[in-house]
Image 1: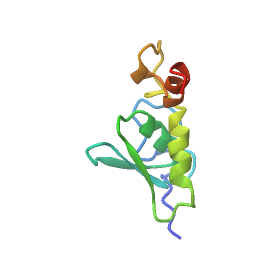
Image 2 (image 1 turned 90 degrees about the vertical axis):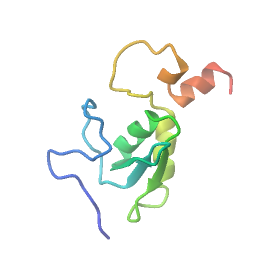
Image 3 (image 1 turned 180 degrees about the vertical axis):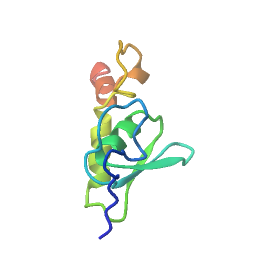
Image 4 (image 1 turned 90 degrees about the horizontal axis):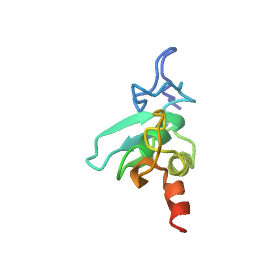
Length: 106
């Protein structure tokens, strides 16, 4: 099994340059935007990237454990877009999917 782990001191391609968090585990997902541009990432940064995209999708890499894409998808639902930025979150596009569902009674 081939496991792509970012070299020491480097982070996966799915990490936003302003996101200060380190990678958590190997590169196991590919996250695509609505135009099919994408980045490979660890579960942590894959979820954070997916949460910041409108119409994004996540796919497990061939070597990923079963359920990896589902875990990333579910984690992204609870993460605010661009969660590393501080400030009030007053618009639906600034809140997580779960926060928006709770506010709208779904």
